[in-house]
Amino acid sequence: MSTAILTDAEVTPAALAPYIQHTLIDVGVTHDRIVAHAQEAVRYGFNAAMVAGSWVPEVAEVLRGTGIEVASALDFPTVGVTTSAGKAAEAESLVRAGATQIDIGVQIGWLKSGRYDAFREDIAGVVRAAGVPIKVMLELPLLTPAEREAAVELSIEAGAAILKNASSGTIEVANPESVAYLVARAPEGVRVKASGGIKSFEQALSLLRAGAVLLGTSAGIAIVTDSSDETTVSY
Image (cartoon, rainbow, N blue to C red; front, side, top):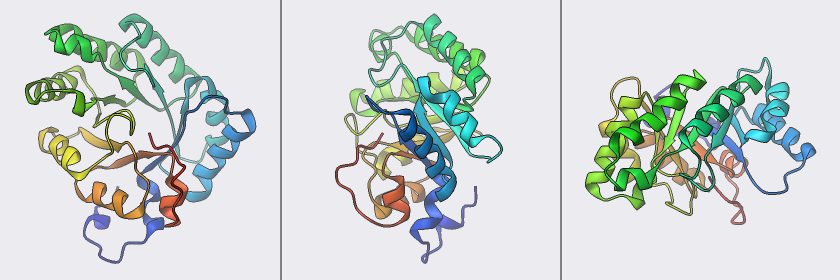
């Protein structure tokens, strides 16, 4: 992606679209709404349509040939409850169904218990099974400073392609400080995604300028049209 957006004082809201992963993960979403969501990703030029795994085949069909990523999440929204074997198997299934990127929850309890090898292997198993970029949702506010350092290091060792500050706005509203923290620790080839409560153009731009290359939000349309919708839930 171009880095011009980081320095261009005249950047427009629409210019942020290629950085946004257009998210719709909710109870009771219908087939028609999912198809419309994928079509919105095409219409606005978003980076990806992010949906629950059960809807990946439908979204993959709509997005085929568009160059827009088909993203999904597993071990989410309740993070850390799926077995490592189950997580790897689901990741493999999602890729077969058409997913090209996957966000995963991590085992915070294992990390806090000092089970570092298990924490690393939980992520590595998904990386091996999926064969597509894996984004790890680190839940930074739930960690002590030492745990944060360990979580980042272990995720990188496991082969994570993208580090993510949190799974949703319930855990943390995405902020430039958390993004900069991850960017400073990410080696070449590992990127940062910001997620959680991203609702405005100004907030989104501040996260990109802090070093994020992807933004996960359900308010993408409001952001790129510079309108406000306070009822939106942002993942």
